[in-house]
Amino acid sequence: MVKNLSTPTRGELIRALKERYMESSKKEKTKILDEFSSVSGYHRKHAVRLLGRHSHLLHPSRQGLGRRIYNAAVGEALIIMWEAADRICGKRLKAILPNLVDAMERHGHICLDPEVHRGLLAASAATLDRLLRPIRKEAKSRKKKRGTPKKVSRDIRVRTFSDWNDPPPGFLEIDFVEHNGGSTAGSYVHTLVAVDICSEWIECVPLLAKSQALVVEALEIIRRQMPFPVLGIDSDNDTSFINETLLEYCKVNRLELTRSRAYRKNDQAWIEQKNGAVIRRFIGHDRYSGIVAGQALALLCQAVRFYVNFFQPSFKLLGKEKIAAKVKRCYDKPVTPCERLLSHPAIDISIKEKLQELGRSLDPVGLLHRIREQQSALAALVDPENNLAGVFCQAKFPEKIVQKSP
Image 1 (tube, rainbow, N blue to C red):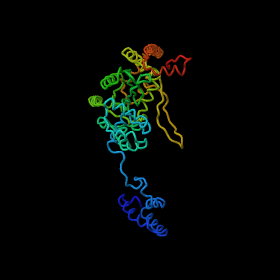
Image 2 (cartoon, rainbow, N blue to C red):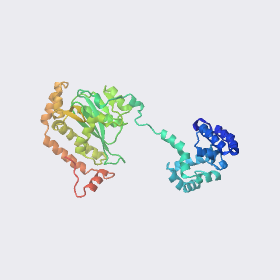
Image 3 (cartoon, one colour):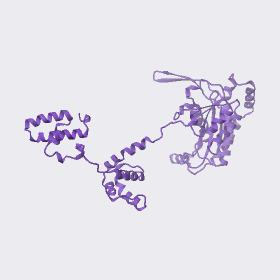
Image 4 (tube, helix red, strand yellow):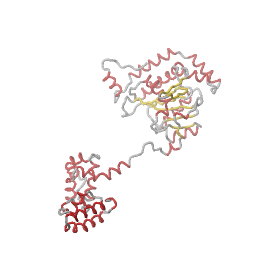
């Protein structure tokens, strides 16, 4: 077959049979063609063209004996043009190539030899794509693979959603909620949210910026506000969490630090649910920035933590069972995080007495009034710059006044 014959071998075979084929009779030509087709694997019509009278008119590349039209210099110049054109396709590059070469020569970026210049402009769009194929393939292979762990992340154990196995109070999931109004441009306030897996007790601390040092300070505040000792922290793969600063902090304070899998939000299902049901519900999606907005958010978060933990019951998933194509979920009765702590055997009696005393001193209506007042104050502090959330609401509901959810 053709794939088993090298180019020189095929050339020698054609030259050896051509002279004999031209001098043979019709019957002998038939036999020669049969032999040549069976040995070379060529189609019979193509074999006739190769051995016939006008075989010298065939394109050289068809016989494998041609020469390269575009040399390495043209290829190198083409790569420079391709990079300057932001790696566009051959058809678009062909259209802009004359103007692009002229502009780059005029500004002194390149100085092409006349022969290279002619070859570059004479190439068709398909030829440009063919010449660029190796460099495109190499450029694609340079792309960073998704989810490649860094050195620090290798020292932190991965914990999935199914690895909790009903832990005692003290194991937290943490995450950031961004108050950017739909645009990540500029600086804006973040809220660090922490949720206890066992009791669903929630704490939230606003930060003026997202940094490693501020995360450690916020965790110190959360640990002081938690009614029970913190035993472990589970985060996503944000660089504000996966770093030497937080790793050293957890080692010094004897906290177990784990992380979720990359691009698997379900590994942090507890915190993701609270981000929407609590933080977005009471704060919304508007953009806040600056010290004044951070202070107003801090006051709101203090009222929200008491109101949610003592007066907002929630369901807790106990298990699920797959029956045919349906999944049946079993939930515990709705109770508040405080009630879960009071009924848990791992919580000390002194802690339970403090929680009961604090619960008796709290006024749910007063807390709700405080929340509404802080929400009104925040509404006046919305940063109009890059606040795409408000623009979307006005475009979708122009006749309505968009208010925060209660």
